[in-house]
Image (cartoon, rainbow, N blue to C red):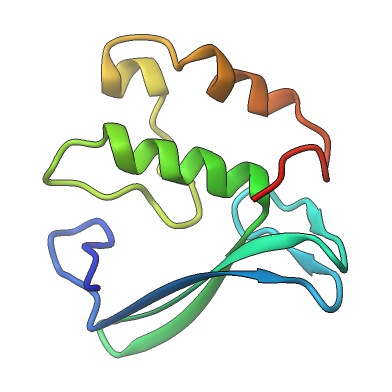
Length: 112
């Protein structure tokens, strides 16, 4: 799969998998700890010759998957969820209640 990471250029390598943490990691989107034993998303991509692995906790992965579904066909959500856009400004309506509720979910409450 080749994904556009934001400026119209596709990644030369893009793989995403759900894995179980053997040790603690930090979510690259929210900064919370991914605890040993938790499932999380690991995305490996190569863009403009630079390789990067991005880890997202279950909560941030759920948000990312939602944003993929509702996105404009010409865009792809930022892997780190750090675009700075407001949901309502981009989509013209508030986020669905289940997505908005994720802002208050505690680590470990959302499962993949």
